[in-house]
Length: 355
Image (cartoon, rainbow, N blue to C red; front, top):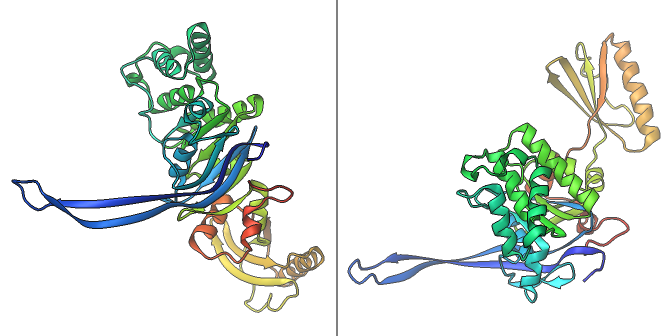
């Protein structure tokens, strides 16, 4: 167990066994097994999350994200491997771990709808041994912090989905846990509510030193929020790097030349430093997409040569735009096609281990 991590998973596996029955006789209700299936939901996953860090766990549906979150929180037992929270083994110190972890699972049924937000926080606070004046003060502070000051005494059933999601985060924070697990925290929310929740996640991480794990299908949210990204596919952790480093591994030196018309087909053939030329169409007119050599001198010479050739052809240049690597393109690349980079390059941040 590393002292630098609040959460750590070491070679964690989770296998589910499912059995399907059908009734053989309606009178006796006797049944027999007709199918048995083994699902390897999480396959030898290893990573750690530090103090004051937002860690994004991304993956397709059924990849093992929610199962991983539930194992960290103690809701699901791993088949093998070890999970630690703040130095405590989750299986051996389950009750202590529960007080150190706040969980928001996907959906809004994490609160009691007939109760008000204040009553919900009182209920869940008592379950986590937060009582008396400390509970009352913390409940009010959290509701104000999340923008629910005017909804403290309104039944949860009358709140909007966004307000219920904010309340779910308040419930997760009521025991002031050092670890926050957020499963799809912005799904189905409007832009304003999503923005508020993202700002609050950053604020409590940076100012309070919380350790936050976020699962999401929204690549823009992950790229904006997360200090480090883990990508899980078919139960395996296929990448685990700081966000900028992960993007840089797949950075492609591609430039878009926005033109008034396309040049002759052979005008840019066999130019030094140019790896690929492809015409495209944009809403403002024709575009020439060029992939260039990564070495600076060759790339610079190629750009000069291309612009010179376009000038010779009498082509008007509207703009030159360098394409930026996006987390969405990296995610699709890692989860839908083979990756030729060494696995260690994808799973170990430079200068630090993930464990």
